Length: 129
Image (cartoon, rainbow, N blue to C red; front, side):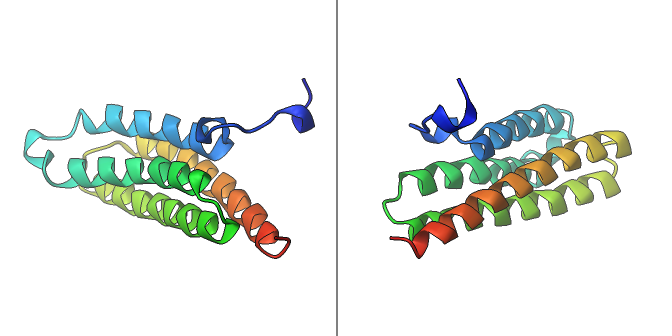
């Protein structure tokens, strides 16, 4: 099956969602190791932020207009940037190693770039409809 013949039928078919979902799973693994007193602090904030990425991609996918899709995909992208900030904080306070930070940050950059492509494509379709 070639690339052009694949039909996107669900938000789970989107590359941005797939990579975002993998990032969420990594975030849950990382935050399991945080101090227990951070459960309602940074752990909660990081997890909610990561979940927001895939949730907004999913919600954007279901919207009827490309203008609405762009809105939700842009919120998802903002959540990626927020997550990157929180990962920096976690590294700087010693909750994650520099190596784990770099590995996770790279994954977040990929999600950011793929989501950028989704936004760009959706914006181009706003003016075609």
